[in-house]
Image 1: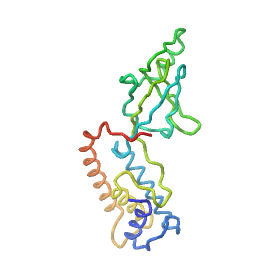
Image 2: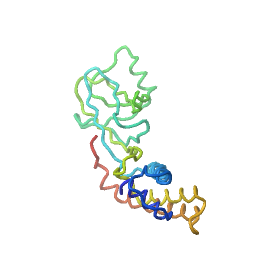
Image 3: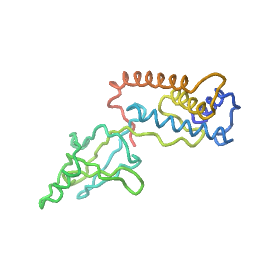
Image 4: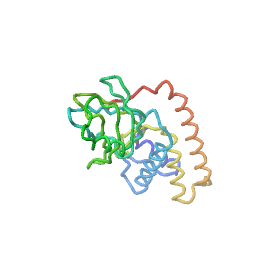
Length: 216
């Protein structure tokens, strides 16, 4: 479902006229905001298969700090692999890494540890690798990433769109105060039940999709 389709679906439920673009009027813009608020809430509620990505970091000799471009500051890192050596790269604390880096004989070689070291100026996660790479390695960061806020009419909702639609409808009714008999509590209960059902379905499919990733 597109952003515009979701907005128009909620508008119909509110007995409002459909619009040609989300930015057409104040009501459609407000519903668009509710769609994005609910989308983020749904995204944060589960490790959705649709939000799984692999970001590949290609190392250079002597460089240990890298940026996970496009990750934002709060991705959920599932696991990390050194694809070049077919070995796992394990997470450790920056305190541990700092103790290794201040050693007079810093090891170089294939990275086997990583730590999260703040964010870049673009707001993406920064990671440090250890040992310090002694050459080119492909490090696969398998993550769950939230979709950016919907903005274009044609943007596709990646998480279950019906759930997002129900949650946005509930928020709209709460804002308006009435909906011809439908109460916020009733609609919110429908939204939460739909979310629970969607999580159960996604969880059942996750076993076979565990190693299926979209490459950034």
